[in-house]
Image (cartoon, rainbow, N blue to C red; front, side):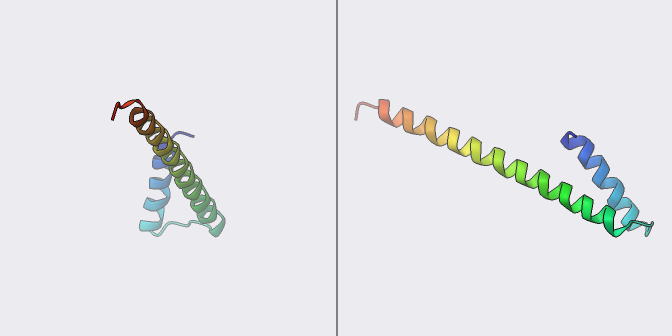
Length: 66
């Protein structure tokens, strides 16, 4: 599920909670687990990007003549 679809899905839950519609504990637990998974994926990607950037900078530093 892409982030846009997850965002729409989460918005639906938030609207239901705001309007005091019935939302089960199981649905909320699933919502929380999906959000946690999405955050973990973002953090993993961010860590990969930071490592890649660090490696590029180190390579450039190694090539400098001084």
